[in-house]
Length: 490
Length: 98
Image (cartoon, rainbow over all chains, first blue to last red; front, top):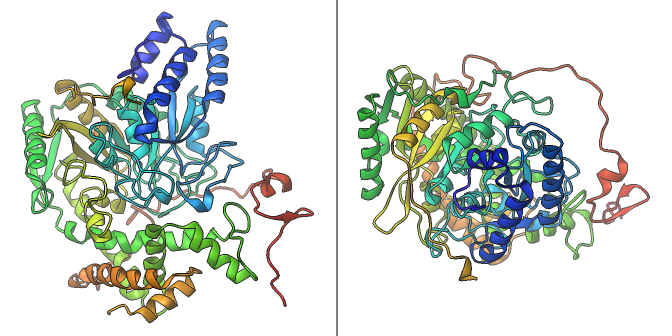
């Protein structure tokens, strides 16, 4: 059984014909992880033994005649900020280095109910704060396409694991682009659902009004499959929506007639790399060739999105991260005479520089005398950004543009300048502020052989149209490149 | 408003963070540059714009409500399983009252 390029769809076909077993697929994957992940660094924890036990149980059920469930036997990697019962969940932070959750995130529970196998936990930026995965407290992740480049972040481990065929699919989380940007930089598919589409229960909170769990996969169809499994109202998350979950796969009809694709002029201006621009413009032309109508639109408040985001996200983070005090779980300092000292030193020793920086900024913008000037102002601008999209979606059904202004940049290239790193999130952040869904699919390679991502944005709770358009593109212009990774490298 | 090292000390205290002298200097510089950047929002007139109160929902309030049902909770042993220090069914912390 060849696991290179294996998708949920092809895996299920092979299980159905008896060509392979869940155990065989898991064994092949674990061998590949063993051979390659020492170099790539996508996983923080590999749960091989339990994965194989579960594989055997699923194979037994199959032999006894159990039908395939939507994800039966699919080895899935879970970002390490999503809680997995009895499996370490560190958020790539020293402060949670030994945290073993007593419960599963709802999304994980639903994957398991649908027959999935959890293969391990993936590396990420600490508490999902970063755009390059260089903020992991444990190790960096290397981009499978070029080992001197970043995989993007914060779900860099999940994207790299999918790109390098170290799993079949993965879950990531997206607060400002953390699913879509690494998917773009690693040449895979990444979907951020509408805010409220997927329960956040068990997702370690960063920016609670922005966070959303979503799939990173090799095809749009796989993303649709995973979304249907994890989406829907959850008793444990009051912000999860009652909106009906539809059969997203049934929406993938390859049809683009009658679809209006909006192209925002603000997403093609200064700062966009020329090669990325060319590739995305070509993708837009292809949409026209496929029968879609191209509409020029404007999102006039785009230039304020990063400022707005870094106030709201850090304010929420400073509040959410107040819980790490060394009392109930995680790391505790050994040098403290009294309680206050214990809080301070635990947090000082447990958090990395970027997390501290964001807690500081968030505390500042929420502090007495500054609340109105920063936080309230940003929430008003957030309304303006959302209105931009409401107006745009009166003229079009999806919006197309680049996911990231550049292809994967070099390791270390932006670590000295946090603001420069923040600016690379320009095209993804708006979807989180406006609470709309977005997907990144590969649309080309740069001259250096690095993937370029096309981002499509959709109306709230209209993942069906978004996936349909992405799928039609993928069918007409399949991305047939793979990173060159040799098993003998290690 | 420029951020001074004294501001940074005050914020660190509010956030229960202990910073080294080096971190103080670095954060003063970096936070100043980030704050200068976000003040860009002041170019916009937002006098009549309502702040977003629930993500995505300006008109509709589609956040769901539910009945307040009593369900089983974690249980003491499980809740304490990750504690750095515990004794007799409690989390143990350094002395609070001298």
